[in-house]
Length: 285
Ligand SMILES: *[C@@H]1O[C@H](CO)[C@@H](O)[C@H](O)[C@H]1NC(C)=O
Image (cartoon, rainbow, N blue to C red; front, top):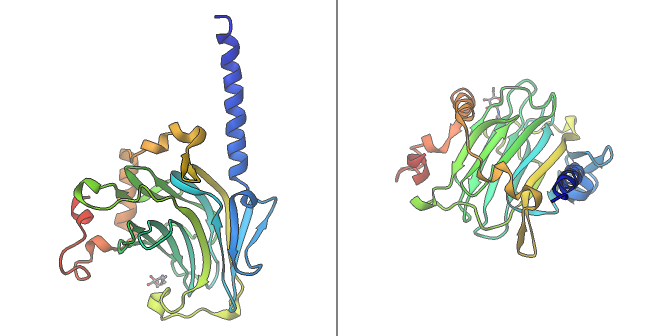
């Protein structure tokens, strides 16, 4: 009886400590990622709070998360290659392994100074993608850091930029559209040369006199279920709002605004590409 008044502050204290630990560990690239590629071109700096990837004529670079996730809300701030970034691609995505892998993609296609980057998105389920949507951004993504988020829960995937939803991929399994929901995914990112296709379809080549090209990352935060040895642990975040989150009316309005004003390619509108008919999710959305 007398204990309830002492237990509650203690619980509060414990949950405060736990959440502080979670936040502290989530901002530390040294603990959270492995540099997988680039022979010193990827660097972790500023007390492990900043990560930079670079690209020169000899190689690009990349990293991946140590953890594998099955659902989560994953935020990262990126500042993209500035100046003449034509020909370069910065990829930032979630992916599982194998021939029937799932994947949730952000890809940033560079451009000549002053010309707009393309933000390319895609969703793979059971090894099948072909669900590209592309956007211009409503700001210069090279001038400062901006937050790129993936919300992935059992009902939907929502891509957001600075909190503004730009794309939603719903779970339409009941209508026969495979949905990523059982293969754990890692976060991957890389900066590489793709001047055979990236900028105006490969017309503009990488200007190597501008190398090295650099992209920066900070404030990584994964509020997610982590899979270790086949066991999923959602920790303190298991009860978090993201697990059942959906777009509210403001979110829907914002997404409409982005898609109306900034979407430059939508596979669901590409009837030429799908002469046998658009993919089923296009007609169900
Ligand atoms: C680059 O700029 C041109 C001209 O504005 C534009 O057509 C193109 O979509 C931009 N982005 C890329 C990645 O090519």
